[in-house]
Image (cartoon, rainbow, N blue to C red; front, side):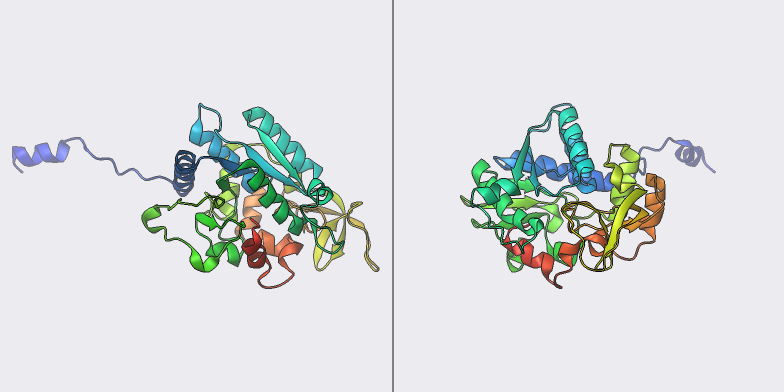
Length: 314
């Protein structure tokens, strides 16, 4: 071996093969989307319910603009039937980050004639009119949401930037291409864009990230004792908003929630998972999504979610 060969073999590497983990890649993509929207749109807003996906969104927004504060408000659509544990977590996050919280109440929307309560339509469906009115009143041009493509087949169709017309409606056949992660945010007056920074995440990614970040979550995501009853194959919470039907019996079970929403439509699952590590193990072997397993509003028809999204639902 020549002196030149020896020098080449012992020379320090000038390039390190550095790769991000899957979670770091997802986080970087989401933070990029947050910054793009903040730079491009005049009045963005973040939907924040206090549930696990919106908490991931809030954490990503916090990181995207740190050390500055999050430069847009957060909006919650209050059905009046929300779990108190979730609302308490929502308030603590808002207080810690110092963001402006806007609460659009379905109850107020009914009282003001914005939506009509016919006694048959769920509060969850009445969120749509309440949301569209809040967007119009505040002049929001972009709304961040925590929808993920693995949740439901209608959400799997949707792009990261999802255009809404001046009636707040979505046309799945008229979506804009997003080649090379380039997003088209052009809108006309009265239109707005729905933005989904965690579209490419899965439920397991969400829990891995929450475990890594060690952030506060509503206690009902973890195993606990609860008085429940069986309805349509789901364990539902005993509540003044959930009057029992003939044949339904309340019993105490060890349960947890995979998703949170309207208490009259959100079921829980029997589980002993009382830590994030145990939840990750449970989710890793699950063969049905959290919405498919425990959200009654997605069971009305095969196209229930898509129909609502076309009307303006998130």
